Amino acid sequence: MHREPSALSEAYPFLPLSRDGLVDRVAHSLVSAILSGAIRPGHRLAESHIARQMDLSRAPVREALRLLENSGLVEYRANRGFFVRVNSASSIADLYELRIVIETAAVRALTLTNPQALPGLRAKVAELYQLAETGADMMAHVTTDMQFHRLICEGSGNQRFLQVFDQISNETKLGLLVIGRLYDDPHRMAETHEPIVDAIAAGDADAAVQAIAYHIGVAKDLVIEHIGKQQEAGEA
Amino acid sequence: MHREPSALSEAYPFLPLSRDGLVDRVAHSLVSAILSGAIRPGHRLAESHIARQMDLSRAPVREALRLLENSGLVEYRANRGFFVRVNSASSIADLYELRIVIETAAVRALTLTNPQALPGLRAKVAELYQLAETGADMMAHVTTDMQFHRLICEGSGNQRFLQVFDQISNETKLGLLVIGRLYDDPHRMAETHEPIVDAIAAGDADAAVQAIAYHIGVAKDLVIEHIGKQQEAGEA
DNA sequence: GCTTTGTCGCGTGTCGACAATCTTCTTGAC
DNA sequence: GTCAAGAAGATTGTCGACACGCGACAAAGC
Image (cartoon, rainbow over all chains, first blue to last red; front, side):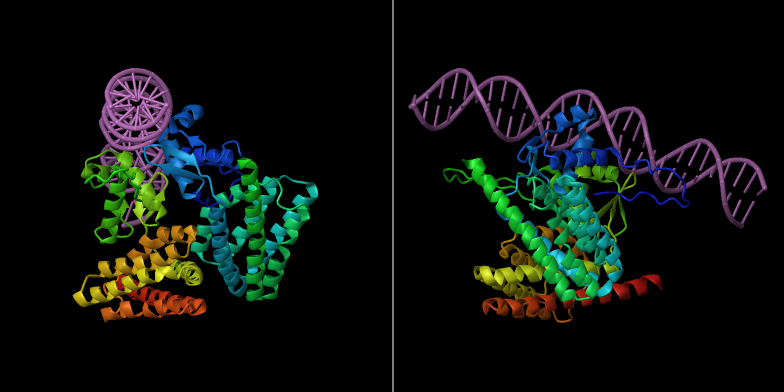
């Protein structure tokens, strides 16, 4: 989603003032709105309206929406425009199956070829504990959790794994965020990551695969269960 | 890419005239040009030129290029435009690793839950033999081969697997097409699919996984080897 | 009362034009 | 001869306008 900022040859104390173009800023703004729940699934995203509200022309809005389409947050219907995608329970289940497939492969590669990634992973887990301690909101928890999983894909050394992960990460976040609270005790969120890190530290690839498959599987069940309850409530 | 035709309540003798918009046609045209080798990797794709040649404005061309970006055929650099992506050997290796991961998961699911997909797969293998017989060109072989693999992803029942497959299929095709001939005997192409179909028919998921992993692995090695030779020749 | 046809508003599809930006070529100094 | 700064050209980024298609409602026919 992001474009590479040009690396400065020398380190000056300047903030990298956003060289992102309009399109990226629009896209980011839209993602925030969708993830925050300000725009609900199924809602229509009329180019003209968005352009007017943001005080720019339709062209960049249109491109931003096309970008979001790739990350699965938004759906395009010919001659009708863009809509916030509404995911069925089975679609979410498929999503988690894909995550298991990708991340097990990634964690196996990481364990066998790149144990240097371990400190970064441990740091993320520590961060999760800290968030639980300070009683941070769901968004913070989810973001850090996804960063942990992204590090695993990144550490696999396979760019394609990372690419797929990034493509589905926003959708995964959205699925998680519609739930107010995943675990009753926020420390559980952090704890569930421990076995993965331990297995990697031990250099036991099979154990790491088992651990992450279990970890994602649990999350899957919780999310699916929640969607089921939600639908009941919605239909009643 | 295609849109569904609305079902008529009564059967009139009209065939559903193609509702593909300009963008889709432009995209298709560009894909053909790239896959056919008419436009080589690294080549710049200037919107204005394409628009002028196709006699339309830049807007639909731009959108078509954004579409191709998702399928990995084209790369976008801010303020510089679009380029036909040039893949390193390691990038291709990563691609095939991803295919193995996705398609093994898909073939496992298919074997266990959807043996009805078998006839379709057998038909594709038969088609491959026929192509070998008639001495068809590489494009025909590759297209049919990819259709076989797509059927496996489709038959898995997991929409996400199919989505990922479609996303990388054009890139895979391109990687295959730059090679004049993958096997010396064109029948080999067809034969290598047999063990997969046999394992599915036997209901042996583990064997099917093994078979397809081997199948893709062989293709991977051949492609990588070819790229190596190509680079040597290019550098010399 | 139900189905079909006409009308209308809204939003997308495409366009041509201008501004911002990058690339290349030219010019000049060392 | 090499390098740097600047000018010129080409290409992308953004814009506002207009034509077209869709969906909704009203009107007409059975």
